[in-house]
Image 1: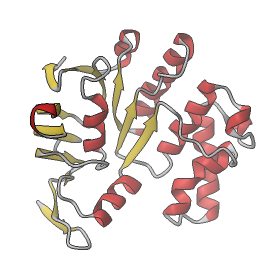
Image 2: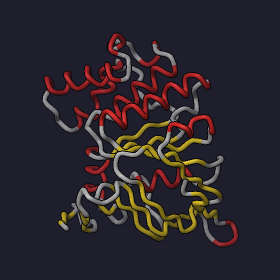
Image 3: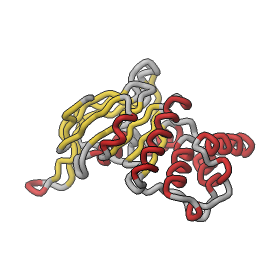
Image 4: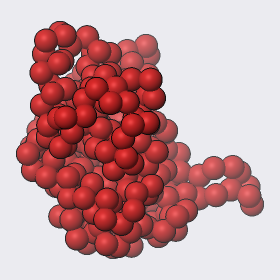
Length: 244
C-alpha cells in the first residue's frame, strides 16, 4: 500500500493499488437540514464496483442517486462513511487533491450535456486537456480520435446549438474521456433524449467501457436502459435494496 498526501492541509489519500475495486463505498450517510425537517438522502449505503464494469444505478426521482454520484465524484462530502475511487480515499481529501482526482481520474456526464455554447465540438472535447496542459499536437490527435469513437468525426467544427440532443451528449461523452479517466460517472445521461436516442447513447457508453477499458456508474430511472449494464444497483429511500 502506498500513500500520497493532498495539498493545503487536506487529509492523506491512501492508495490501495490497482488490484482492488474501482469504487468502494462503506456506510455512507448524507442528510440535508436538521431536526424534524432533515432530509436523509443516503442512509448507510455500502457497495463495490469492480474495474471494467458498467453498473447502472436504478431509482426513482428523490431516491438519492444524484447525492450518491456527487459524493463519489468529490463534489460533496458525506456526514459519515467512506468513499474510495481508484485506490484513493475521497472523503476528507483536500481541495487540491479533489481537483486532481476529478481532472485526471473521473469523467462526468450530465443530463444537461454541459457543453460550452461558443465552442465547437472539437474545442469542447479539448477543454479538459487544455486544463491539464496537454501539448497541442497530442490534444488535437486525442480530440479527433474521441470524436471518431462517438461517431462525430464529421461534426468537429459544429457548435452545440447546431447539433441534435443525441449528438451533444456524444460530444459530452467524448469530453468525459479526454483525460483517459479510470471512472465515468453519468447522472441520467439520457434524461433529455427521446427513447431511441437514449438507447443509442447507452449502447455507446457500453461500447466505450469495453474499448477504453474504463469503469462506468450510470444513474437512470429508465428500465429500458438497464439491460446494457453488467450489474444493477437499486436505490430506494436512500438505501441500496438490490445489489443486482
